[in-house]
Length: 186
Image 1 (cartoon, one colour):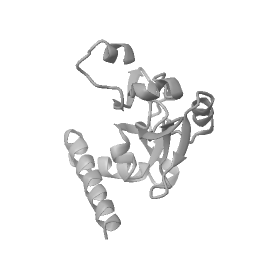
Image 2 (cartoon, one colour):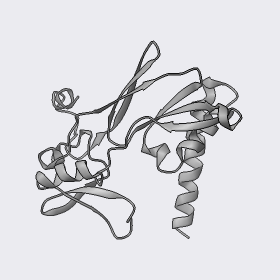
Image 3 (cartoon, helix red, strand yellow):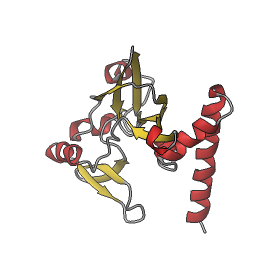
Image 4 (cartoon, one colour):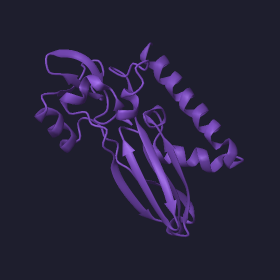
């Protein structure tokens, strides 16, 4: 993807980029690839709990403060730290400049940090499906930063039709972002 992005000179990806999570189903197997802080979460029925839905995180959010991610970034002279007013968000910074502050360790694009440990190599995951497994939600940090895995599973499960589930989820995330902003701004 980075090679493709570089082949389009009109796209400015020097200090911008994206994450991705992909899923391939082959029979009863799920194969996932993840770059950045997008995530795949499975909804499965828990027979021991009366058939209630349980959320199972299938991928790992590749944030800069994960030990193996931080180690790679630091070996490449990048820096990892959170800002004082945002202590819960570790970011990747250039060696001698407090920029750009990328909140993930892997991304497509973001070429300004590629020499400093940010990579576009995905992590791969596998899940063997069972009869209890119901659906998988693929989403970016725009959802996961404000809603828990369980909340997302509950929202999708409660949607009247699967075709409208994404809209219900986006609406719920937008409400939470607005609420978070209102609380922060007093």
